[in-house]
Length: 366
Image 1: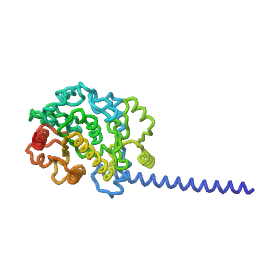
Image 2: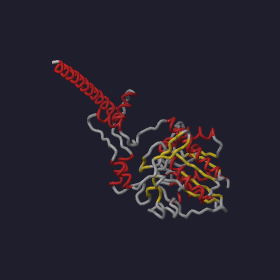
Image 3: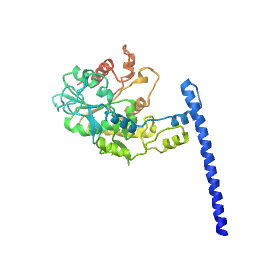
Image 4: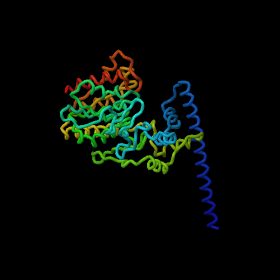
C-alpha cells in the first residue's frame, strides 16, 4: 500500500514537472516568435525597436559558420581561398602554391605573390612584408599591389611580399617566424586592417587555421598541425551542425550550443586586444632578434575612407600599440581621405596602392 502511494506521488510530481516544463517552453516559444516577428518587420521596414528585441532577433536570425562556408565551397570545387592558387599549410592554415597563376595573379617559386623569385640579397635594403589580402593584392593585377609598387620605386630595395589572402595577425606571425631567418631582412613591415585582429581570435576562417592563446602571459600556438582537405572534412563531420527553422526556441538552443565559428560573431574586445598586442610584440621581438627594424602599418578601408568621423577598433588598437611601444608606424588614412581620387569600398585599387607605397618609401628612406 505504501509503495503504491509512493509511486502515485512520484507520478504526480513527474506530471507536475512535465506540465510546467511544457508550459514554460510554450511560453518561451510564443515570446520568441513575437520577438522574431517584430525584429524581422523592423529590419525590412527600417523601424526602430528596443535593444533587447534587436539582440534576441539577431541571435535567432539564421547565421552561417565558416565551417559551413568551407563545406559549401568544397562541394562547388573551391576548397580554399582561391581555387587553383592555394593549398593547405600545416601551420598557417593555407598558403599559395609555388608557380601557380591565373589571369592576373602569379605566385613565385617560393610560394608568394610576385613577378620575381625571392632570394636573400644582402647588397640590397631588404623589406619583408607580412599582411592580408590588401597586401597580397586581391582583385588587382600583379603590377598594382603596393609591395610591387614599392619595389618599382627604388632599385636599392629587395621587397619580399609575404601577404596572404584572408590572413589574420596570427598567420602573419607564423609566416614571419618561418621565414625571417632565411631572408635576413633589414626591415619587417606588418600591415593589417581592423578585421585581422578578429581573425586571430577564431580557429576557422575559409579553412582551418592556427590560433594563439595566452598561457602564463606567453603565446602558445594551438589548432595545429592543420591537415589536408579530407582530414579537415573528417574533423567537421563529428561536429553538430545547426540549422534554423520555424521553432525559434530550438534555433536559440542551437545557437547557444554550437561550437562552430559564426561569421557574425564578435570576439571579446579585451581578449582581442591582449592577444593581438602579444602577437605584434612577438613580431617586433623577432625582428629585433634578427637585427631588423619593425614597422607597423594600419590599412584603413570601408567606412574609414568614407567618413572622417568614423573610428574603428582596429585604428584605436593601432594608436594604443604605437603609444606604448617604440617602433616606426604609418596610418595613411588622412592622406587617403585627402587624395583627389575616388576611394574603393573594398580592397585597394591602383590609386590607393600607389599612394600607400610612396608613403611607406618616405618612412623607409633606404
